[in-house]
Length: 422
Image 1 (cartoon, rainbow, N blue to C red):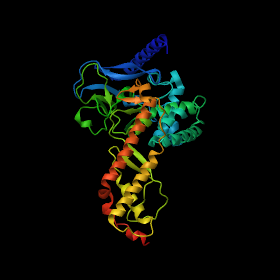
Image 2: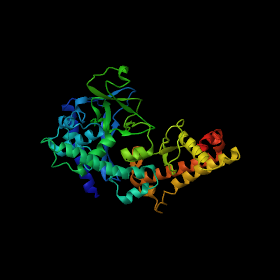
Image 3: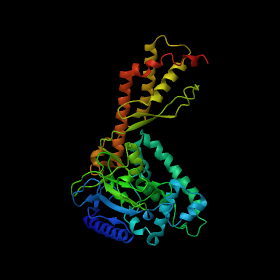
Image 4: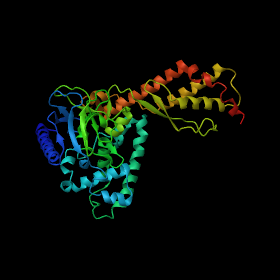
């Protein structure tokens, strides 16, 4: 983008921020002078993204915002709230159509000035918007098959909801299509907060501008039903944003979306986080149907390998069960049984590793060195980070079973012998 276009884009963004602030104040949102919205250039999506920074030193438990719950955009407050109830739509599907409806209304929407500061094409950093070529960077990861299934689920959900709502005159059926619905889904996925049982998940103006960090959390939203509600005086009809630590002047303020793996962060928010210790790899075991013992319960189809290479306990048992029952004769000794368990486990992990294709020789991370979002990476750089993380976890798991095979499976030697007799 030429410098002149980028400058014009900046002024347009700042104008929208000004309109949003005026809308907020006129509708009863309390904005304390300790914070402001800042616009920063996103080199991946070629647009300005927003964040909130401190204008002065913040004390711990300092009130930053007070937002009336009725200003939150959700199924209970949108312009088709009655229609959603009439057709029985709820949960995430209702929220997606609520946002799509308000986007379709344009300037006629009560939330127009708020929606104007959100990405007009949706959260393009989410894999749901990636091309097939871009998705190939994820091949082998736990996320790759998930986003493929998401495509069909999204289309099915749209067809269901649209079919139920199109009969209502108030519903903008002439403007809402799958493309607009997809934009709404991306906004809901990356920005919605759960308020309570009545309101469910909603978009909360201002609260969704705070970016995420697992390692450095400065603020937190509270409503009257929060477990911390008695720690300070609150109006039951508002949501407040409050600092949870002392923060210096001119620092970006981060909220947290909870402890999530990079796979989850990339799927829902479009970025991966540096030094994320919450990673795991989902393993689809290749074994076919096996005879199940009622005392062991039903086997899961998916098991997890944790960031330090530890194996989900149920997978350890599953491998011991499989090894004990697939051959016609019992093992001669405990060592032979353990070695067979280790061999089976390694076969599963190597099978998963084989799904990762060799990345192009081009250094993806260097090419996207500016693809930063808070404390993370976007786009191909994020995909590369996730690939490398999951490969490392699988290799750690292989080393783990080689070192600790006796500890993992020794206690299960002959435990399943009675199953061979059935």
